[in-house]
Image (cartoon, rainbow, N blue to C red; front, side, top):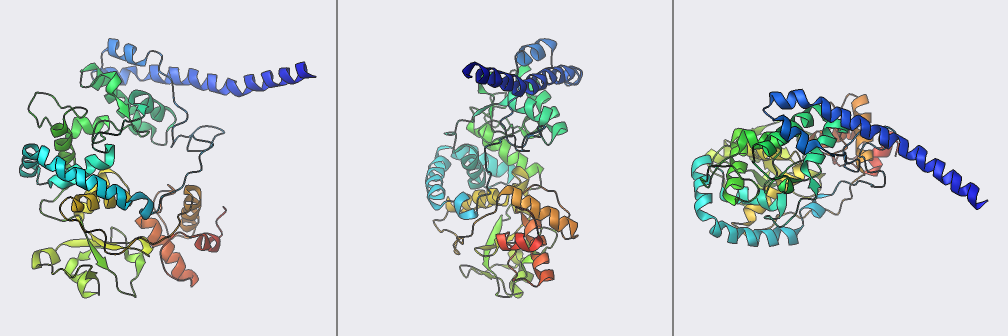
Length: 408
């Protein structure tokens, strides 16, 4: 009986392992197929062969599309979206702000050059560094080349990562970075301020003047490159990222989308009030802004300027921009958000995506199905709440999920 069980276990193991071996063979063939494009990009045959020899995919990465497996590529992981209070922890902000103030003095000459050359405040680029790698203390966990190769093979954005993989080979061949230093996030971003290889080539700056762009060991280069990326994406000098405001009681939260902009003066005349009673001058009131309510009608509200959305181009997440913007503010002022975050819970990614599918079917949502409760999703939920006669709060809750008839 024991021998029979052992035989069954052996057969099961062989059956389970067979697709993986086939997939690995497919991966090897896929990598080999990239040689013509790599050659056209300036990668030598010696570099290509050396760096791809023995390269294997990492099927445990998130955001993969694998036959017979969950789309995240992490079968045992129940992924939840963090609420703002979890992501923008006061203790973390306070710690990073204190260190940021010290680093502002340590790198003052480089930061002065960044402000003069790019018009990006020192606190903003320091905040990006703090958020991305904890001012260099955080060791990125993945082999960058392996991540990019895997995402190019079975990721959701294959074409993008195909190019990023080839440019990573180009970086290695040109001696931009040693393979041991090419550590990355699961999304393939590298360096102190987290650049994809294409961003290195598009926005890299040799701020320290040593003849090379080093995002791994040169803080001036990393910060200068972050500033140039912001400028290249539309950063406006002298413009705040956002203003925290108190929304009027009758606020229509479905207006909180980037496409709806008004001058700050118009928002103020509509009943929005700066939280600390500050008086905004004529130039500030003339600035265009969108309404941002990260927790729907719960928690803080903001008037987000164009620079808010520029930071969002750096990392497409409202919570990321709020973290960076607030951390930058805290380096020059000790004041926390005036309105506390609510104790709201967030739905699982799969539930938010189910919501998006139902809202799309109803014609209320036209953005991508990504399971993220961003501005467009919250506004679409609010539109459904209006249509269904539900209380309007633009927040993805279990009650709204059930009202939509979305499966859990």
